[in-house]
Image 1 (spheres, rainbow, N blue to C red):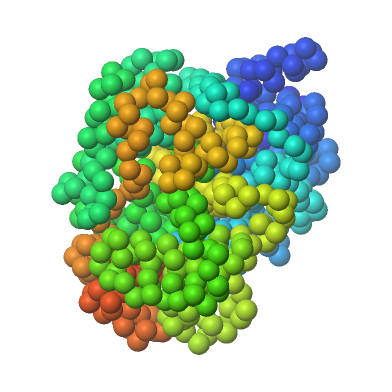
Image 2 (image 1 turned 90 degrees about the vertical axis):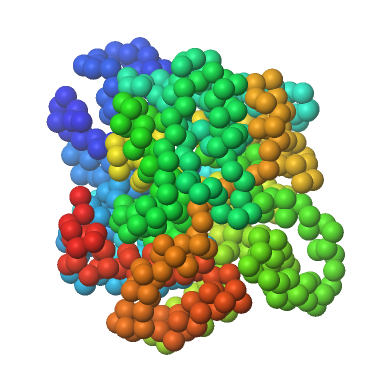
Length: 584
């Protein structure tokens, strides 16, 4: 959108939820509007107050504003990083986009891989921080803005920082007010984000977070359409079947439910499509879940979906939060004994879910402080990964550490911040923006559906930071305050059900559906040609995984995704291709 005097141009992706209030303020200043969009409000707000507009926005966005009067480009990304923004500083200018694939034809023909970023993808399955697979392409971080002049970054700053960074005393919240206010803040966020000029639907997984969103959205639209997924053949061994809980919530709330049925063969076959769409080699099948549901919603005429993403990151709920609380039973042990605990559990049978979980639970037992916090996010340790690296890859990495961005972030937090709140800050800054939100936005927008996340409304984020940790995680009970807040609205068996994730049968895929792809992409010839990993070490890892000596399914998936990414984006002369066909 271009200003009336043609002096300012705005390129905008997202939604400004408080645009009506902002418009009223601008109209009081005699600003004249030609239409009714939030885009026009954003443009006029910049014209009125300049860069200070950022602190007044409540929404999800990435935008660029070219100011011809000042010859400056202002780039900004929303506070939690719901909307992505990539950029590159080149010899002949500055380029930016919502997707890496949009930049490829503008980059030099020879694009160098970022070895440090690849190490992070392998370590965590996603890449914390500003890195991407390419050294020349960076991410603008959540809550960041920058000013570019004459093709160079002139200034970069945080316009929003998480509440955990603030040292001011928090007003005390008692149990009753915490429960009531949680419900009211979430209700306000849902109401605010349901405003749209197109039909709004909702994801429904059968878990507390999405069910809470649906229950409160139903107050605004009693017939809100809900969407879920059914995996033919059921979930992976050790995972809970979500569908009965989904149906229970839909029946309890009286809302229509659409189910997309997917078989493992189709999902495995769509892995290459997934990596191409994500722009990054995230080694997690969950993005396909978002793609299939969004596709079904779009076919039914729904262009906006509400998601429960963010509930675990504000109120706790992941297994690692329970593990953190359980540290009090063993963290007092001397260092050598804790190291022995890690070694003993590391030798457990990795073919059983219990063995895998105990191994992961105590893998960082020998570490201290923030290093142990960060370790809960790991999927593979440094020593195991280094055995896979080629000599050239090791040399390029040097002393680089995958956990560096997260440790640097934690060092800036006030020292009095509790371990639980430190972990939640990691969730909010990294796990959300660089993993969950990234794949949710990329896969939904691939089919023209926008996903909104009421839990990440900035007012709710600020309020959640005031809730004492004892009301979030009570021993092994996560999300305690949210559960209490939703008891009048949802069945107890849904509220207090076991926590589950998306149960794609990845371990079976490695033996069956992905076997041919594994043999091709990770073959000795392929690995030798790429030069990143040691061909013999990769083959040993595949054999050890087949024999059950290790559980390397996710590491193998990560290797697969990196090779798919390289073939899609590097081996095609800058034109992304999928299965030999130009990717659109």
